[in-house]
Image 1 (cartoon, rainbow, N blue to C red):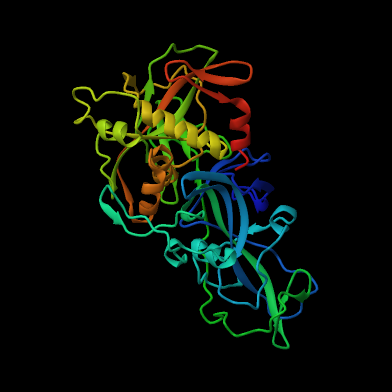
Image 2: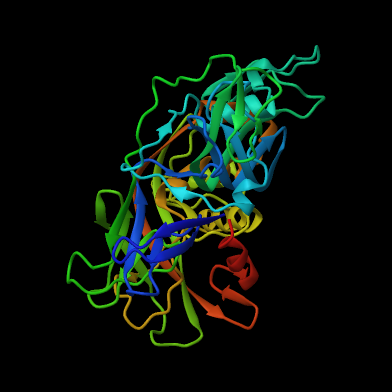
Length: 430
């Protein structure tokens, strides 16, 4: 999706991608980090010939990885969907191809328009539009098996049909798109096409009195808070790098926050070494007995005998800090978590080639449950518990791991991992 905007410095027109978090003006050379306090809000302008009073209906726009835990397997894919954020049948159920064909604009506090407040979260809207049946609503067959595992007794489960126990959305670009409409003769009209938005008449379910203003988009100069040097970032980076003082900064609507990081040892100034970023997380997983590496060996049924000290060793979960297709993302998260690498590190990025960070820490934490599910040796027993498991991050660290670059992939021999370069290119489109 392309977004039209004006450079805050000189007013020149700038075209942005929906995933862009860096505004670069070709006229005044300004570079600004783009942030939002909740999520980004965009609107489609109405047609010029509309005479009625126009108001704007919110829709959730989701793009990202979609994971589902079904019966005894984890399925995944990419999702690109718009769903209404209001519970009204008087508006259209989807924006269709408009996000791909029209250029919306940022909602700003100065906009003198009526933007309706969202009544439903994305998850609630998605459930309604998909008519999804939760595990608690599934009709249970007569053939039941009693399971007892970990901390939660499971007394009923379907054993003859596929059951969706849990789904997760990761690495998403979640935003609000406002579509212009107006009311004429008790019918809600699309203010772009000047046609009825729905077959249903206006049911007065839209809260026109509760319309509010958006807090707007925040633009931050990409200047290092530590030394004042220009920081380095790609268009979709959520972590900015200062090459002068070798510091990392996480962008937020409130400003830049220093990010803790470590660099795994390798030969610096090497042209064939690329450092790929990973999130290393110590988490409290409530609802399972996963506390140490010994617990992980038993849980995943690894062909290893429990060694001395494994019962006390801290268990860390890993996830890529860069976007890749869901199959590659899950493979990397699972493999590095099972390996539990623990090598000497430093915090010097000078002389290194690094891959930009475009998957924030909060998304990595969200992925922990899917990683746990994919490693489970007894998935039929474990999956019914997923909705009762809570993950809380205790500490996190951004770790750069050296990969050897070849013509078509990045290879890490010690971890026995290979990542296709095409996977990184596809990840930029998620």
